[in-house]
Length: 396
Image (tube, rainbow, N blue to C red; front, side, top):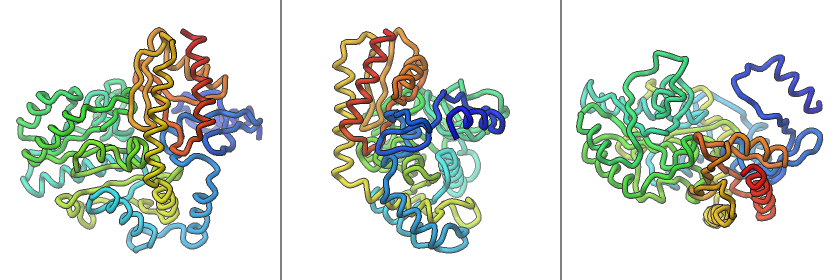
């Protein structure tokens, strides 16, 4: 099928919940995607951080195929080797105690919220159900994770939302102290780099003080690493660069390199909170997804993670060096990069980039978000940056 035929088929049969760009994608290689007609796009999006090791990776595809022909799925009433090995790899790589596997970031975050509320109720009884999150946060699209999200733009249409969430400014320790002083809080949930909110890294001192305060109050600290995890920031998880050990970590997006998978990691004191029958999911820990995830983790060698840090620094410094008034700030960690704009709209930049053959994302109201595959080549990086520079110069 050609691009027009595919778009017409979507229009006839798919709910219009996405304002899709005028792009049809058919195949990929490395960090480059192609339309059915062969138009090339350098991809600085990775499917919003999902395709962590790029496109056309034969080893990844073979790991999936080998597992699929062996055993594609059984329920979590039974044991499988890929799930066991993946849990071991994640716990050993993080110092956490146990894992729970799910299918998406929102589902992982919802499971973490359930864990926190059960932890508090088991230990203290009713009255400690509130969860504190940060303004400009994003935690998912379910009713509960929308309530957890600290952006009013998402708080529409679907009332009533789940109760028990309060939002405070990021990096405001006094506000956090005040909330925890109320005595009704079971958990603080934060993204260490706020992705949808604008690619905004939290201050390390604030995170450290928040961690200490949570321990003093016996309030769980949940790190939402759905976007920052699995090598995106230059370490397996971003929390490893903040010198803390959270109680709960959530992950998804890049874990299986393109297949739907997510999960929760819990530390020693939280590992036994979710007991038999208190939480479940049909597809969590699916053997095929687990096999793909094992391949991804094997790919994330110390050298590759170091390269992620270097690539991110190179991209940020290159953009900062451009003498264009359209860029007001470049920030981020590893290959999670935000570019604040002034005088031009991010959506206009995205549209013009598509015309030239570059895919980028927006973040918040005034920024671009760059999430290239962790394995992007120097040549693809240079080509993508040249295209972005030309667009910014045209629109400024």
